[in-house]
Image (cartoon, rainbow, N blue to C red; front, side, top):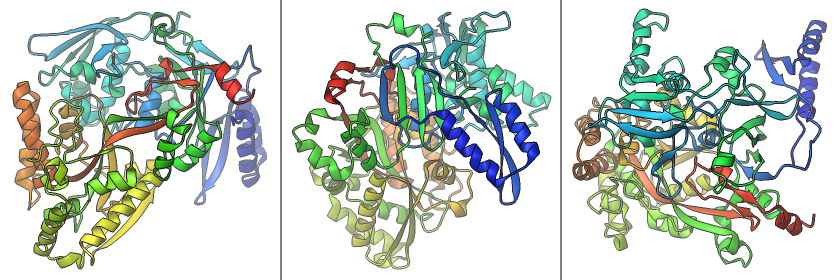
Length: 633
């Protein structure tokens, strides 16, 4: 299924040249072809736009065909930049290519060594020191030779990943000119928030002083030290995150935003990028210089090449799996019962809890969801038990909290938190009583029986999300017959921009769909880092100035901050209170279910079933003989 880069690029180039003829342009194309870069001009709304594409012939194969994993990334990743990634697709790819100071164990989620061989803290956990290994090298794929090569420094020696690379990566994430939407997670690092939120001129001395004051420094070439705003025993887990990873300053300075493209990108992990055909596929190849292939040989697999498609429709992915064109895949909702009972597919099927929560968020500043009574009524009228049993059918668990039960501090299943979200067999109100209370709230809000209530529900393109949205739309219409619900979809990259807190209010829906998967298994990563109005992503646009729930929003923000420095026993109670505020009293979101994985893997594939965003493909292996025999090759 792989398409040669040269043929695609030349085809695109030919079309563009036909549209924009000119002798001068043709001369320029010829010049840059010799350096593997082609400049093409296309007309956008009457304005010439110059773009560059890498054009290289597929190198002649050397030796046997590489062991190739065929996979579906699920969508076009918005970015491969560690400072800019916010979604599981981007993060999953970054995880294969860039090393963190720490990694998280697939089973325990405890921090384990990666770039750092050891770490320690002072008595109150406000200063953390990481000792790094000295043999992790920067590499890049050379399209002309088809080889992964070590990047050399000015002395022609392999460029080693150093503490300064970590310092640069952290500060670049905190730097407001980078535009990182995930920088708030690093507000735990002293001075990061001050830098990230400054309005000072980036060229000013004031800005430079803030940049220099960020609490991360290179003690020596392979020792990095972090100073935190507060003591956090879970910081080694944060140190595993993509936003805290070393980044290659020299190539970013040289290439700007295009540094992540194939032929330019410089990485240091088990795999590196060899090909990115936007909208079609991404190919990763094994980095032979990664220390782990030898040092972790007892855990390592044999995947040498990862060919990944960008198919958003799970039904298409499933069809390709059944045709043996994918080695692993998800299960479409409409195929769930068949897979679970099929004599062949049932043996390839995996069902297990994963640390993610599916939820609907409410834009709290856009009418009519600016009324807390409307938000609570909408959440109450979601029949979670019926949804997971009759629509999803994959063992999902109805959710009454945002924080998944696999995390420290989660009060999931506690009927003192949003009891109306739980069925009676989970000690909740049950759906009939929840709808009855919801009708009272809507009548009080001026929408008797839903009359006059118009709701725009939006989700990203996905057949599964569409099925869920249609089911919830029907539940809302059944509970409140006179309300109107419109469903809209957007492509993933556009959708993330639409629901971003800084996007125009008029472009936002009333209700949006998202899932959250743990970056590290602690409630701080959920209620505080996602919804804090002062330090979190805050897509619902919570505000202490809200005329209805402003005091509750302020209490929520203070509660999550207080939990950060409390004892473990106190944290449990504080996070429970935070969930009561978030889900019930403020009703910023409607938690719907806790995820389970419903996946398939071919008999010849031995894979790790880790959390989304941490695939750890370097640990996967393919029995090539078994696959060839099964495919008659």
